[in-house]
Length: 296
Image: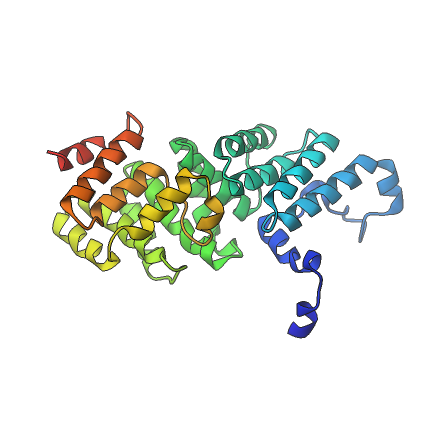
């Protein structure tokens, strides 16, 4: 039946993207006694019907037109301001547009309305990514702890691969090195997008080095073939081009610098990256002294 799918219009082909972005919100599902929403239901709650249509439109356009998805989320919010689903969608759209502070704000609004967070693992991962990228370490730790057991529910294989690296770095930042190493062992067993191994090896080398196992860290770092992939992601992150990171882990700037320092091609480049790490890391970062020793 592939030939049928190939002839479908773009709107139909994007249903798969919509399914990955989020399940249908509970308020948009038919009641158990209905096989579908009746005309009477729609007539009694016209704003709800419009709200659900805007959400569906937003989910279906999220991958190919994040601005349109954001507009749809805003229209859904105006129709039903007490629901969290439009904020999850808006957060994802703003993230794709590189507007991380705005994405953080919309996710925060969603959590205020629904403290348990989104039911979709994909949206939960994006909320966790924003928390990590915006320096909300406690929230990121909590979200990734919830998300890892749901890894199999992520419909995208690349998202599943990225999840273990992202979660490992968050756990490492919290001092949980053994748990982080276990996540990376899982990630190393998988084949991710091109460049994925640089993240796995860079993170693993960082764990080993922070455990005092410098020789093992150097051996792992040699497998990566240099920091090029990580430095390129730093450029994308600074320019807000998160859409270019598709399929790769979303890593905070400080962690990227630390990983790049261990994969550096020269001692001078390594010191440059350690200085950048200290500049980007929070003042209370538990690993600052580790980086400072590298510059002595």
